[in-house]
Amino acid sequence: MITRILGKQHALTVSAVGLGCMGFSHGYGPGPDHEEAVQLIRAAYDLGCTFFDTAEGYAAGENEKLVGEAIKPFRKYIILATKLHIPEDRKLESAIREHLDASLKRLDTDYVDLYYQHRVNQNVPVEEVAVVMGKLIDEGKIRGWGQSQATEEEIRRAHAVVPITAIQSEYSIMERMFEADVIPACRELGIGFVPFSPLGAGFLSGQYTSRDVYTGDDVRRVITRFSKENMDANQPLLDLLHRFADDKGATPAQISLAWMLHKWDFLAPIPGMRKVERMKENFGAVDVTLTDAEFQQLEAELARIEIHGNRTDEDIFKLKDMI
Image (cartoon, rainbow, N blue to C red; front, side, top):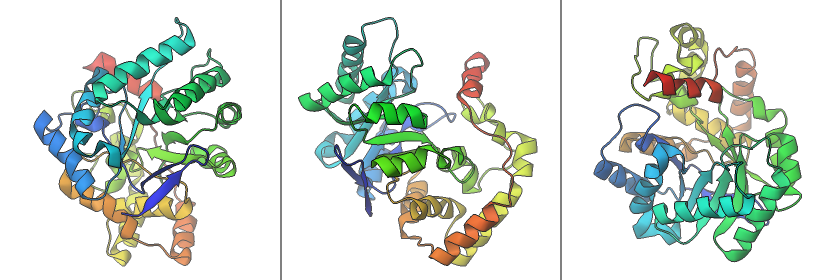
């Protein structure tokens, strides 16, 4: 597995493709049982993955417990990321410290490599959050910090106080809104970028059709790009990916990941994977090399394709009333 460096002042070296662990606990319907999930996370490490992502909010902390157990045999050899939601009814520093201490206990570790603010609070100045994160870095409780789904302005304001290691936001061939400002700002400032849902919640794997039915807590019930109409309307994108994949002896998922790895050298996606064959496929994307000419051809053809549907936090919140 090749590696990427996230950030400058608080830099972290990670595998070029990491593992988003949320789906082992919730978000995509029934998953593997606990023991199988532990073994799958360990299989990812055996396949070269050194970048594992979780959050306190995933299954109310249960995902952190799972990840902590799974990575224990190789904790010091990997980069562990988790996230917190900052409550606004408490003193900021004490609230962040309390949340971090709870995460450390669940993860069974004494430090976190990368600690994200899961969403940027509109009523909490990012500069004040940065000050607290800087103290935690100085104390060795975290090695770097970041934001998720932040705006360019929020990133610049926070980074000016304590340098940010990475921004984690949605990014894929289907969702490119951050190419306009956030990703270029990260490049300018020396901040890593970590795409979540880099395969469009699985759409870009080409393994789902408009006939598939999603149940329970599967977020695809409310993500509009998975409606029958939008699935059918987005078929030209899959046709394009299949064509490039056939030419390269790869899969649509590998082309999707290879595309972003080619485009930005400070980026490390974290697809969710719950089967060893998917891990081999997605980690194998680092071996799919696009030439500059192939990349430019893909970009040109993508520019002519309209994407239908999206993924928003507001839509995902609706899932609570459906389960």
